[in-house]
Image 1 (spheres, rainbow, N blue to C red):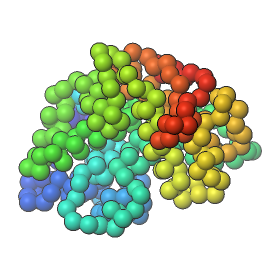
Image 2 (image 1 turned 120 degrees about the vertical axis):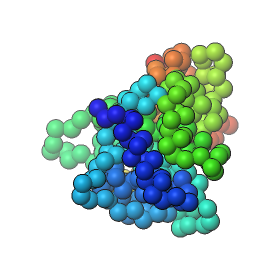
Image 3 (image 1 turned 90 degrees about the vertical axis):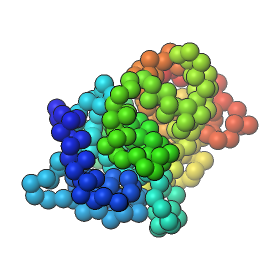
Image 4 (image 1 turned 180 degrees about the vertical axis):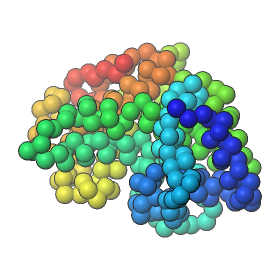
Length: 293
């Protein structure tokens, strides 16, 4: 396990060496020290910044795990997600697409797990969707996604703040507090005591963002037949045709993510009826309940 102090020294040096550059530019430079998969053309499209993977002595310097705000975090994933959370000045090609910071963060993690699950060869030993989610949307990944959003918000609200300063500020507060901030600011969660009062609207927004990611993903373009089949839940859970990804898959993914937020946020378990279609509340809810603990 890497040490946060050493990582912060590295970031502070890069900030000093690039004095005058914005947090957006610094974050994207840091992305080059994570993993090769975070410096592909897709990331250039998403962030609007073309950063090559750094080879040599400092290769993979930030592609590691460490403890931040009291929880283990995939720091490379955090840096990559952060690079798409910070607002940049001016207009770039990335601003003209449907990609958002969600899609290079939690929504992309969940969507990638669903696409991976359905892309497995029939002849192979297939893993379940739950197993795919556990592998590709781990607690360390979820912690990275929450950190990227909260720290990105700190930097967007204070243009004079540096990434190293924002990380220190984040680390000084317990992770449960950050989860509540994430839930309220990103999903409009109404939290009273330890209870989320509107879990159906929170889940709907998660499902909507994941469905958008999958429709945008080139690897999934031939899998989905229509937006309706993708997002509309059937009257009974599990009654859909499981040969193709569908709304039940999206619900499984969103509940998996919610379970992390509930557990690490110290919140009461959820028991609610999800909307049939996210964002179309007038169509009503399904007649069954789902749980997230």
